[in-house]
Image (cartoon, rainbow, N blue to C red; front, top):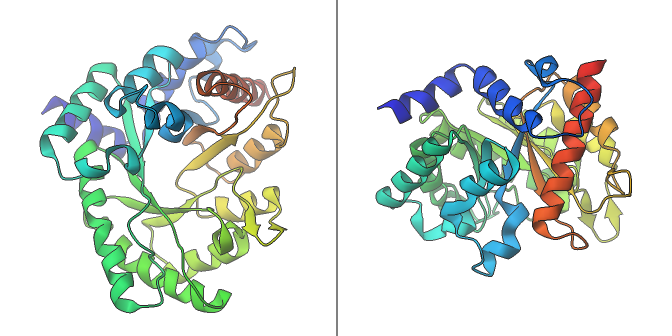
Length: 314
């Protein structure tokens, strides 16, 4: 009973109090900050950890999915996690397994924020039967998210046809799924994830077509490659997608000697995020190869905390 109340209370309050405590723990552990932790009681944003940051360790069997929340909390002081469904693909309806995830997270004081869902079909499939099947394939993840106390599932908006046709098809699938998810108090968000979805203008149009308060975006700082040599402007794309954002992915690949991301201006990006009125979870998603996964997560955390402290000082 306490576990369920705790998670629902978090969602009901918008995560404000729990988020402040979570970041207080993370900030207190970081000796690089010049701003006292007390100054961050109301942080500009909150930091979570995306499971994909450890995908190589998980795929190699070096890390068990059930231990992910422990790694986030014990190794980094991060108290919110973002799961990837491929790492527990056959467990979506396994009540005992989900209960174990809940127990482990509750014991650590870790909030299970969202589930990133892949491999369940195209929500914008031109074939209506296939599109409806893709929508229904996601139902089990909506149920799992509710069981885990998550606020959100992240999906994709893949389709075929002209940009106009794909927008209409993706909006249809997303609307159907969102109407189902809304009954469970779960959000459905779309990430810029290649193809047309990496166009901030196109995905924003899809959001306008869906026109549902439970449907939004998950702007990823790194996923603006549209294919065929087309790359969408990163800063324009994040600006456009933040109008509908319910989650944010802090994608990183490499860092310079000062600890800054070599391809992305994080101060500019985080200003876009917070100027949009977003002060919720920003998920670390390290995808680089020069640093190990563990080192890359730590470097991303230091960068986000440094930007946070600078924002708080201003």
